[in-house]
Image (cartoon, rainbow, N blue to C red; front, side, top):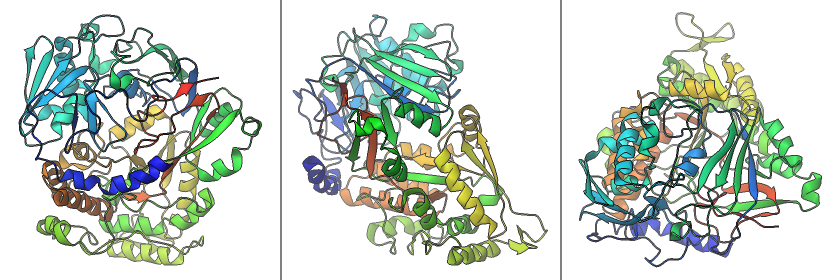
Length: 604
């Protein structure tokens, strides 16, 4: 806990380190790289600070997943894949430290070198790097992986590839990427692409693979067994080549990581209670406080761990698709926000224990204020003043109800906004001048009982303004297919953001990705202001400019009224078998991909 409290001051000082951007020029091979300044750990570091180098090996961790899967290739657009697989199977040149805003250290790469302005980056492979079948990782594998992922892979890889001017082998174990745009983050992104075995895909359609092909990678785990829709078992590779690489020391300690799949949250929780599952991440504070008193907890066989973190809130809630005529008008989206009675929902779901998300970077120094824009923030947004949604410059806060079920003030405000947009209540039904009713569909994935309960309350609130939406609950494969095609009006949305936002913001909110199938711009934003703020944060060379650009971006997104936010989780709650243990030193990112099960161990 002392580490956590000490890091509060450290997080506040992160933006000061940003001022070092552009001042440090790297002209020689190094063990790591940071977005701003130098990485914290020295070249001779033994292990990550939040890993236990003496952790024992063995045991198993079993988690419950709601939904199903029909593919084991996490690197392509097609199919429904367990989300964890891209972290287990995606060994890359560099690995990200969870204890720094954005620093990478060598994994497959023994060194990294960049140009004076990061106009190029070069990686040198470690000797002995090997795939799980024992064959060596070669530069040919590297170059094939980058080109294949950049042209036929998941959309998350496409944006980077368009900014690569050239890729060339510069030695037996080295490769250089030269970029065609000014973008300091590209040198880091280049180090985070998964390296696959080229020979495995000879004569195989990479983009169309399902469960028939299990990707061979150089990562610590391999898929040992699976049954479509039922489970995936990953086994620690005893011959993993990189066990002594400092970034990997003290990690990947558990012999088996097993993902069990269930039809809904209730079945998943019951499996945990009876011991079929031995680790469960709980997002509902009311359930945590009322339902985690079963015998295994009382006997001490299950430990309830509460883990703080220092990440921005990100955005969780229900996103409105501006591609749909219903939500193209910001006034309609504003009405939907007023009709959503968060205070009543929060009391019903969590006993009002969870604070609401107030913006995309709330709970961090990068979050916007709700007062009028000032200084560099106002200066950056000024050229776009005519197109900005009201509140962006003037200041914006989410509606707050009195907590009563009827939410009279919110209902009245929603009716006013709808009328301004050309909709009025006619014979009890919200309709336009032609008498056409206003309705829309809310798409939800099967098994999300908490979200369904929230939407049930929302539907009742909408009835007070004459709106009756349709709620469609579909299985995970259908949900992915429909969201990939943007075939929804409103749906559940969760987007994590970091203390070092970068190129991923284009895929989340950039105009060019709005019409890209399978992309992550679910709301369909096409805003020159948003594009410009992302560009500024990527090219900022001073502390003030970077922070101002992120705050300005936060304003355009939040005041754009694209998402109805629900509550944030500033702590993580994990119930787990007492044999599953973790270091007491918590990284600033806390419970995040790369922490569980990576630095956990099993000890009787």
